[in-house]
Image 1 (cartoon, rainbow, N blue to C red):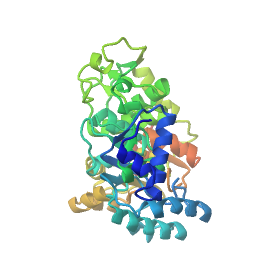
Image 2: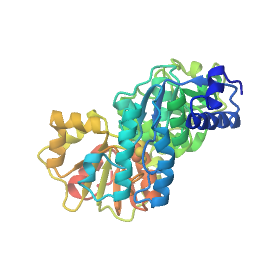
Image 3: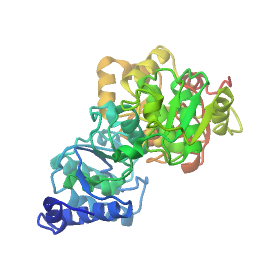
Length: 414
Ligand code: F3S
């Protein structure tokens, strides 16, 4: 790989051994992926949390190994606009729920170091909802697969899928290896998904993403025939694309900034494959995540990816002057900044008065390994992971059906 003098100097340790280590990770990764050069990055979203793999109640050895990376890393200032991916909970909530003390202690230390090194501690899987909105063409280094797809597909920014080490290394050195969707030719679509199904809710968009992810794997799909998505639709589509498969970017013809037309998304070529998403595929996607044995619900999880203020307002309007069923837990997951906004606007109180809980900065299944028997959720990503990670039965349905289940304690099929 060709390196500039500045990059060689970093690699040689002129700015310290930790930055040299970061540079060598990025160079090795780039060489393995066939990159020819390193390019400047101006926006990162990194997993700055303890332990690195977010396992609730991790043992001391795992915590120590996460701290071995984070302590030296966070002594350096970040080079650009850098936000943080979810932790296992916001510090205020440490008092409200039972959390493993060693992890709490380490996380508080990390939070302070991250603040000093210049990270904006947004602690969310949807950084684009709380101020990290890169512009078209901006080179980013983002963790969180759903956010990566959103950045590439909806914002037209450019990021490959990052892990903890690479995103932190990019934030500290200011460089990323140039490969994958950072290059024009790798952003072109190869598969066309013709959408004839009626998409009536964000969860329907999630069904489209889940189906397409399974069909396309690592390739770039382009959607034709869809209506104009709202932000919440796009959020579900992107999360499900990265769950059903390993999609890094997609195009929505007429919506994705670099795909004003279907032809442009395909680079003027004929798609390698053309598939259809009709009403049968829509129903089938839902049915894949509905293999429950009973309709009684004990847990409702909303806000995957993290809820927008608009979603919280909708939830509040629906629950106003009502109360959720006894013995049921309703989680609304969001970023701290969004919760603060919802508190100020009065929506948070309506939800908590109804018996719900607005939980910040974390993910009930992915990081906290919540215990639940039967979950209903409008998020395909949550539905997919909840069954695999915590072994709960899961039902996927739209937001209204989830809220009805929260009020009655049962899922009303159809
Ligand atoms: Fe976010 Fe957890 Fe969903 S990380 S995207 S709430 S599975």
